[in-house]
Image (cartoon, rainbow, N blue to C red; front, top):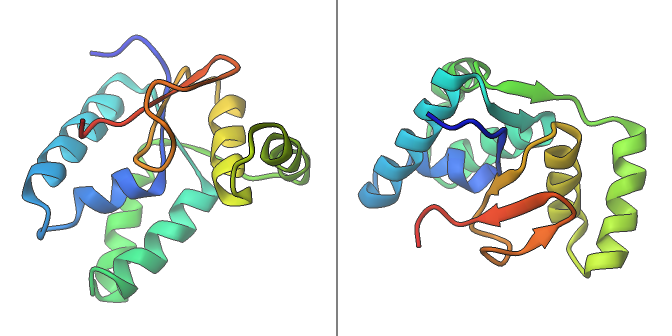
Length: 138
């Protein structure tokens, strides 16, 4: 079990429910289950919102089933995005040259005291302060 706090970007959660990407689905399910078991897994309200949209639009999951998935995902620790986090994300966007949405994910990971951000969107191994990005699929 992991001893570090970890934060999940939306794409990792989406893969846990994506039957078309079996290998990624297995990896995503395993790391999410480990984080849930250890109590060290974090997500944000942004991640929950993005998950719902991608699950229903891209994966074709019915809204009721997506809600069930959100209820299970909610076993992770959830960081509520605040106005202060949004302001810090704008600063990170400028400092690191990220999209606003990626900067907000990074800010939420930092706020949650995660040392690992599981994502497919940022450069694997990149450190942003004390948060390191890890692509679990490479």
